[in-house]
Length: 134
Image 1: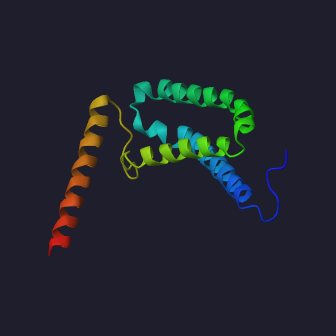
Image 2: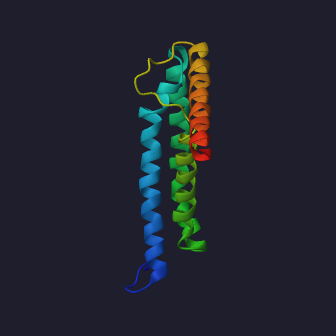
């Protein structure tokens, strides 16, 4: 099956969507092992990483079925995976900043992180609203 022919705009968009999906999928997988463990207290960090890894493996087991999607529409696998990667990227922006912070040891530490981050965001919004009004 030829996906791309020179001058074919639809083929070009299909390749771009597929490459975006590959990069996004790889980035999501890396986030599981480098960024995600920082959000769990020490006593559950290994279990949480294991569960996240298992979900990633489940997604990897479903990957061969993209061939079936490709029979329906050539652009469908790139679109589905790209949309899921975009959804994860949007979800990550809701997570608090971890730079310069000690990793949480208990669930109370984790709750304090989220409360502190929520307060910073509301203070920044208040400052921005005040500057806009002035």
